[in-house]
Image (cartoon, rainbow, N blue to C red):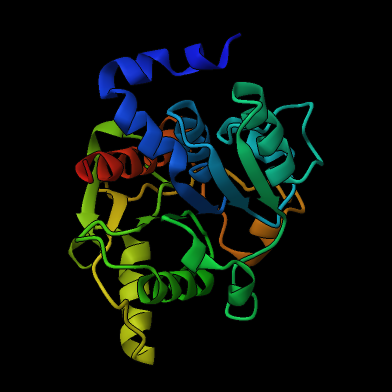
Length: 252
């Protein structure tokens, strides 16, 4: 297929100038599970050509219900490598960097956040999530309320797609993850340098009714495991991608 035809429907809507701006932007996604993997695919399908994906985990059988690159054929592969292969099937000319590692206070300097136009936070770990937000809002240039950082709050334990919302971090309501983050920030007197937008759900979390399978994944061992569904995590991820495209469009 001719390169010029790949994004014809996107260019038809947004125009060639906008497509040029989309292709020039550099995006990094931290966490490519149920939310981040869908965000990555959406961004590449809409023309982002410089994308770095970060996740230390490998694909396990329990990922297959909601993570884009998780299939019976990719179980055991590093998530970032399986996703990179998928994204290059969409656009073989894209520059997709796959980093099998975690973001943390100890590794923060390895990612050179200052080189990116957009940072997507889809991290599960409370501590690492806060570290990334503090880091990104300090380093990245100020570009308005939305800025260069977009973050996912809790997508697990929800089933209602009509309750997904976008709010500034301090205005997110009804989300236990956001509440826990704000509490930890106040306790340790560590606050974001500026405002940033979050994708979250106003639906109250539902209880787990089943038993979690011990799958050996790093995520399972590091964080509490909750049930989650593809139609919710995918909406979160695609909304994050939409915030990036919308922000680029505002710069015209």
